[in-house]
Amino acid sequence: MSQKLKTLERMLSKSGLASRTEARKLIGSGRVGVNNRIVLNPDQWVDPERDRLTFDGKPVRAAALEYWLLYKPTGYITAARDPEGRPTIYDLLEASQKQLKYVGRLDQDTSGLLILTSDTRFADFVSSPESHLPKTYLVKSLGMLSEEQLDSLRKGVELKDGPTRPAQVKRVRYSSTSTFFEITITEGRNRQVRRMVEAIGSKVRKLVRVAIGPIEIGELPIGKTRQLTASEAIALSNFGASSARSSREPARQSQP
Ligand code: URA
Image 1 (cartoon, helix red, strand yellow):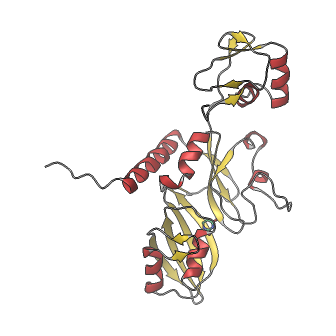
Image 2: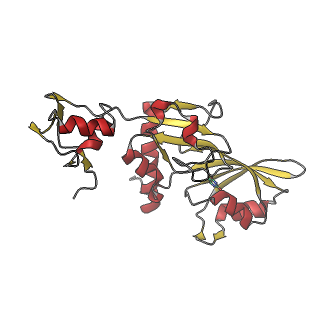
Image 3: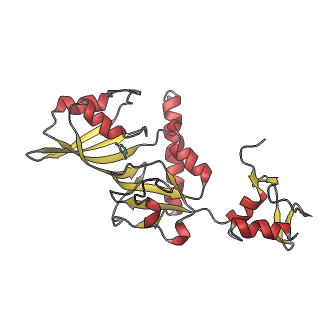
């Protein structure tokens, strides 16, 4: 069975025509067709790419795919709901955005860029470990870190779930008690930056994700969302594809 199959009820609700409960009723009342035949079973599998849905004989079109950015503040959980009742990122969204899925997580004490989308293929692609999509964080860490310590982050440090891939690290400034630096990693392990900083004997005091691939946080106000432009969404997909390719293949020699 194709992994892309969905139930008829889900397809209808995803199209925006009806809620899932309403969709079941509409299907049961014989108003929904699949490939020109009325189907009464809401749990019937349909292939979104091939099967043609109709409602009262008229084509049902898929809802337009959406791509958003959220500047997540600290204190919010990246989850649909939290068993402990803490605020989640969905508390920051408008009613019309609640169907969106987040791509990758930021932990509760981390702020910054989070992608939200209704495009599950795009989400899988961007969050897949194989895409090696770079993510850039601004870090405030405890104490004055030496160049050797920052070099260890660049080369990769040993974590309990294995060594980290090489990272780009740029020191921004020192204060009397902290070091501010930017780090770009191409992995997305749980609390990775915090654990990397602990591995070099320091501690993260503040962590902000400022870029995902070519998408930068820019002037987006904290706690707010904005739509990705079509060219940003395409750039992000292409960026992921090219970084996945370059990590698998040796660089091509250009022909003389
Ligand atoms: N690294 C972390 O430690 N936390 C995040 O939320 C993201 C990356």
